[in-house]
Image 1 (cartoon, rainbow, N blue to C red):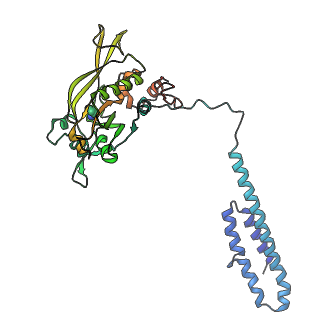
Image 2 (cartoon, rainbow, N blue to C red):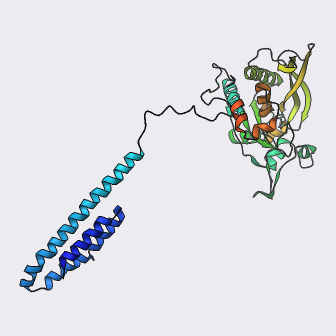
Image 3 (cartoon, rainbow, N blue to C red):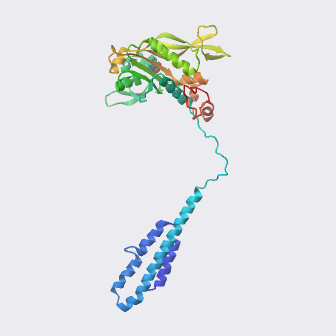
Length: 365
Ligand code: PHE
């Protein structure tokens, strides 16, 4: 047997190994239990003493040099891998500073943050509910029975299938179902706002199939319309950052409130534009419809699992997109959801400017 040739061949293979995996395969092939060199060592036992004396040292020398070559190649491959990693992680400190971070807070998110901040100061928590609702939470529990014309008015997107309890499934048409969910989940008293997405099959410059509302709900003892008016006035003054906001409450109708109140806000015409503030009855002024509200209907309080003789409350619902348009001056709602980066840059807010009552809830970016 030509041990020198075997040695040359093994060392060449080891030198050619380009990665640690290949090297390990070679090691097992030579020196593992079933390895070729291990096999040679095993033949020593069956040899005559003279033969073993002559061949033994050659096989041991072969194993020695292969094992040394493997170790050396392993060190070299590991060093190369480390060098490559270090080269890839180089930081060039002479490069110019990166551009200012891109991206901005969407006006809808900004207004939601402002609402949470303003209402938190009045003791309101933020509640949420699912956008995929069943018709009991969205309609039935809110005193809108099957045949009620309001169901048709809401232009509802229905799902083809019902839920496990045989209820029709739909995309919620308003945030009012969160009233029911809040009452059932936490009982009374309650002070919450519930901002979120709502859906109606409707589309023009001021309507998109998806838009945003904020629901307000207060349930407690001895709550009356005066509390509603004070709350809305305090909220709107803080939101629009004007002390001269004037509200007008008009009788209205919603199945889930009784009495129901439509809230208008006074505006002045300044340079051809509507600017909120002042009485809408003054010359050159007008009233703009802002939100729906009222005292929570007894039937709704009962559907929420509470005793209407013990608990009263008020609720309101306002369009968040509309609040944003009034405050920040956009005039086409559809642009809110186009994802045009130029619009986002223009109307977006600096992520570091978190709205606070002390710092200002609405300083434009
Ligand atoms: N849910 C009503 C709507 O979508 C608004 C509203 C909420 C009215 C709460 C009264 C009370 O138009």
